[in-house]
Length: 180
Image 1 (cartoon, rainbow, N blue to C red):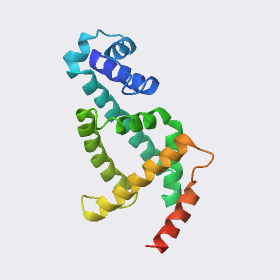
Image 2: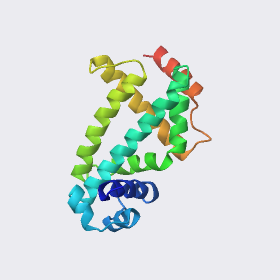
Image 3: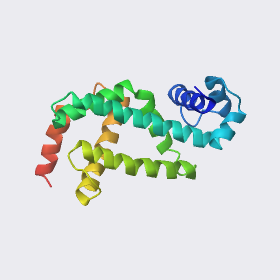
């Protein structure tokens, strides 16, 4: 593994252990076993390295979720059971994302990074719910899936005992749809 790959791995470890805003260049260099100068050489800045590491971690999460979903019947509840399981098993990834959301007004580069990630995520989530492409249906279903995902993640991170189950979510959506 070269310095670049070591830095990505070290940054992922720091995101997991420390979070985004508290991670320093020194933390990453130490975790990666490389010099501080390597960060600037390969990534230009610590933030750029952290952003790339987070994007890779999210892509890995998406790939793991897709693999898990391939073993289900594809029903709404099966999809959400897999999503909830991923929130539980990837807790640091989710807490880091919420940490970053709270920084959008203070860190413009984080805002730009999150906008790009959110748009990509919306498209990928739309595909999970049967709407492919870039059309209006995909935008709407992907946006709804993102809203549900963020809400479910917060519930499961803060109060897992009181959080909605996949069956609860399905029933709640039916109740809401009847009132629209």
